[in-house]
Amino acid sequence: AQEKECVAEMSLRGLREYQSQHTGFVAAMAQFEFLPTRTGSLHAARDLVFTTDPQLNELLSEIDILPVGKFSEDEFLPQLKTLGLRAEPTKHEVYCVATRIDALSQSHEERAAQLGEKLHVYFEQHPANYQQLAEKVAGLRWVPVLRERVEGYPRSLPWASGEARGTV
Image 1 (cartoon, helix red, strand yellow):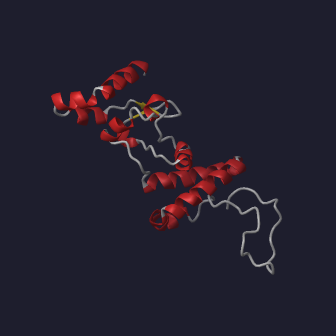
Image 2: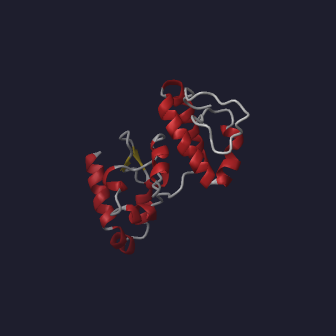
Image 3: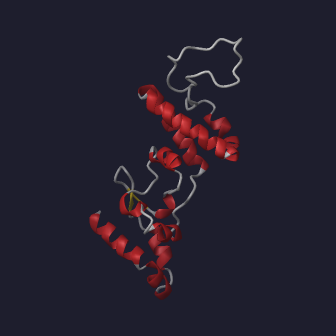
């Protein structure tokens, strides 16, 4: 794996030059699975995502679709984008995040609640994605439980104590 990474690094550094000299180089390189993720598995650039949003990156790290190490640094991002690295997750990947949160809610409630809040923010920022996924995520426990009375909540209605945790 380390030799593959070294060859990939050299190829990325010379991508523009190789691209102009060898037709088909970019297409061949795009098929090459050399980008490591946090689990150590190797992927092609088109199979991974890298965003500038740290909260979204934290969500996506749960489903192992972010490059790590030197390949997540600014130096290589333009070349990786040429090879198909995406800036946004697919709807299926967002659904996988929701299912991961659902699974975590059984054993790691605090972590699931943190991720659920981040997913909620993502859906607020990308309402079209939520509308398309609403039916699929409806049966999952990814919605964070409110722990404090929100502004505007009617005082006449009961409110559970701050003991509530996790996701619903």
